[in-house]
Image (tube, rainbow over all chains, first blue to last red; front, side):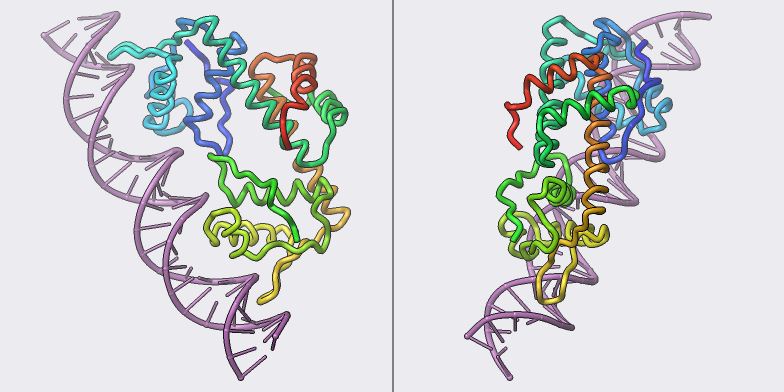
Length: 127
Length: 127
DNA sequence: GCAAGTGTACTAGTCGTATAATACAGTCAA
DNA sequence: TTGACTGTATTATACGACTAGTACACTTGC
């Protein structure tokens, strides 16, 4: 059963999108594996203190991306392959790198300073 | 007159917030300076193809943060001090670094790989 | 003075996010 | 079989972001 203990939603970003990212990043990290069972929609909504429909929307999108399969009456499970994980990794990394470099460049930060900033503050951030 | 030539709004983030970020990052980079004149609300809304009220909201928030001053009938101008710029720089950098390190850690990326990724893809991203 | 441009304010409507409540259909274990 | 749990679907409501249109007060340049 996939754990959502480390899921801490942030204000300003749709919760259903944060659920998508949480699952995808876990798949890339290897903490979420092929076949893993997800909490039921009702269970997860109660656990996170959000509406069942918000969870349903996230799960529906995960299904559209073929990352989970759901069975009436039974639950939902991850469907991951090496290829899918590789795709996810490239997609998520590209977005992150593009975002941070664009932001730092707009502030006039050069590459050396960017690397120094990341290097300096790496340990201070919790995953 | 502050130029918005390099302003390219992204889907999914409120436009008025992106205008705030654009101004703040320009101030940190030094391309936007104390006293610089901003386009009028009507002018900027026409230029960006967005609603005047959206621009008004962004300008109103900039005023709340004492980054611009507006005069009835005349326009709006930047009000920047060395201290304000320093504050902005620390605030924006902290947010960016926190965000990227948290995201990479959730994907199981370690510090060395993170630095290597940034170093490798730095040139590919346009500011 | 006058007209154009400016900041400011207000109301109304659309759209997406999230909530709330309910209903129906299928699985599974006792 | 039955009951509890599951996935799925529908309708209604609330709120914020954004659009649309309008109005008023003020400054500036002619």
